[in-house]
Length: 449
Ligand SMILES: Cc1cc2nc3c(=O)[nH]c(=O)nc-3n(C[C@H](O)[C@H](O)[C@H](O)COP(=O)(O)OP(=O)(O)OC[C@H]3O[C@@H](n4cnc5c(N)ncnc54)[C@H](O)[C@@H]3O)c2cc1C
Ligand SMILES: NC(=O)c1ccc[n+]([C@@H]2O[C@H](COP(=O)([O-])OP(=O)(O)OC[C@H]3O[C@@H](n4cnc5c(N)ncnc54)[C@H](OP(=O)(O)O)[C@@H]3O)[C@@H](O)[C@H]2O)c1
Image 1 (cartoon, rainbow, N blue to C red):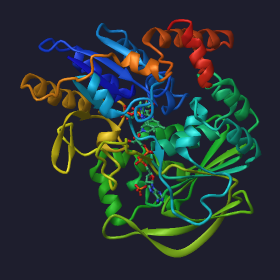
Image 2 (cartoon, rainbow, N blue to C red; image 1 turned 45 degrees about the vertical axis):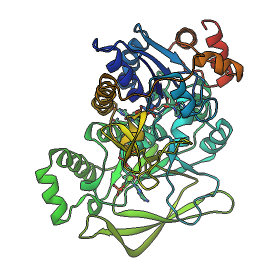
Image 3 (spheres, rainbow, N blue to C red; image 1 turned 45 degrees about the horizontal axis):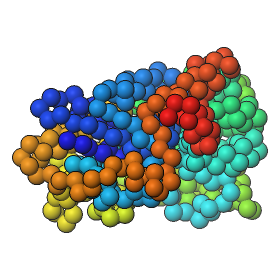
Image 4 (tube, rainbow, N blue to C red; image 1 turned 30 degrees about the vertical axis):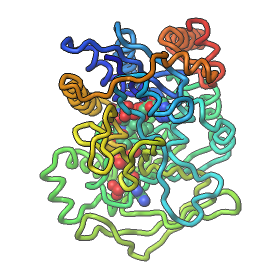
C-alpha cells in the first residue's frame, strides 16, 4: 500500500511512523510539504530559545530516515497537485497540513501599520521562507512599546522573545538577520493583555514562570489584576494547573520593580477595543472587563489608552480549506469521523485527517501522536476490509510534478539542508543557524537531491 501524507509537521510524521511501524499491511509513505524543509511548527512555531523542545526535531527526523518513508518537500498540495490527483497516485491520503492562518480581533484600527498577527511575527523570528523580513526589520527597531493580545502560550512566547536581550537569544538557531534586528530593538515595555482573568488564561506554568526570570526585564502585575473573584478562586483551588498559574501571578503582584531597563506589564480583565495612530499604530484603547455567568466577559465601559507602536495579536491560529475537500467553515477544520474525512455525513473514500486541521489549533506536540495513531488505525482497518479506492494512475507522482516544473526536495535534499544549517551555525559559534530564504534552501538541497 502507498500512502501520501500532506504536511510534515508532528501529526504528519507521527502518522507516517504509525504506518511503517506496523507489520500487518506493508506500507510506503511519501510525506509531502509545501516547504523545502520538514517539521512544520516545530521548526516555524516552537520558540527558538526553547532549545530542548525544538530538539524533538531529532526524534521526528529519525522517522524521515526510516525505510519506507520519503520526504517530498517544496510541493504545495492544492497548487502543484490537487488532492484528487494525489489520490490517483496513492491508496490513501492523510491530510495533516495544520492551521497556519491568523485570526482577527475585529476592532477599528487593526489594519494600521505596526499591527501584526503572532502567526507572522513568529514565522519571521523562526526564519520562515514566506515571512515579511522587511516589515519586521522596520517595525522592531522603531518600536518602544508593544502590546501582545491574548494569554495563551504563543502570547507568552512572543512576550518573552520581545523582552529578552539579544544576549539571551544569540545561542538559538534564529537567522542572523533576526538577531541583528533584535539587537537594534528599542522596545522597553511589553504589555501582555488577557480579556479574562488569571484563572482563565490558557498558558502553562512552566512557560509563564520564565517571564519573571529574564535578565533585563521586570515583571509588573497589579494586586487588582491578580485578585480572583469567588468562582475563579474555586477553580484555582480545584484545578491544579490553574492554581499553579495563579500562584505565580499573585507572587509577581507582590514584587517591586528592580529598575531593569525593560518591563513586562501583565494585564487581566482587559480587552483592546481600538488601535489608534496616523498610518502606524501609536496606542491601544483597552476596556476593563468583568467575567459573566457563562464564563465569558462583558465590558465595563472603563477605558485606558496604552502607548504602543507594535501590537501583536496572539488570539489563535486558523485552519483553511483545501480546494475540492470538505471544510467546516465555523470550526475551520476538516470534518471527520474517527479520522475519516466526511462530506455531509458520508465518508470520502481514501481521505483521512490528523493534527491541527482535524482538531483545531490547540494541543502540544505530543497531543498529535495519539491523534495520528488513531487516524492511522481507521485507515488500516479500511485497507484490511477493502474499503480503499484503487489508485488509477500508472505514472508516478514524480513524473507528474516534473512535467509541471516542480523542484521536489527529497529526503537527501533535506539532509543536505540540515548539514548546511549546522555548518553555518558552527561558523557562528552555534549548533545551527536557520537558512530562511527559499532559494537558498533549495540551493542547499541541490547538493544532496
Ligand atoms: C507559535 C507556536 C509555538 C508552539 N510551541 C510549542 C511548544 O513549545 N511545545 C509544544 O509541545 N507545542 C508547541 N506548539 C504546538 C505544536 O507546534 C502543534 O501542536 C503542532 O505543530 C501541530 O502539528 P500539525 O502537524 O498538525 O501542524 P503543523 O506543525 O502546522 O504542520 C503542518 C505542515 O503542513 C504543511 N502544509 C501546509 N499547507 C500545505 C499544503 N497545501 N501542501 C503541503 N504541505 C502543506 C506546512 O508547511 C507544515 O509543515 C506551538 C504552536 C505554535 C503555533
Ligand atoms: N511551550 C508550549 O508548550 C507551547 C507554546 C506555544 C503554543 N503551545 C500550544 O499551541 C496551542 C495554540 O496556542 P495559542 O496561544 O495560539 O492559543 P490559545 O491557548 O487558544 O490562546 C489564545 C488566546 O487568545 C485569546 N483570545 C482569543 N480571541 C480573542 C479576542 N477576540 N480578544 C482577546 N483575546 C482573545 C484567548 O482568550 P480566551 O481564553 O478568553 O478566549 C487566549 O488567551 C495551544 O494548545 C498551546 O498550548 C504550546
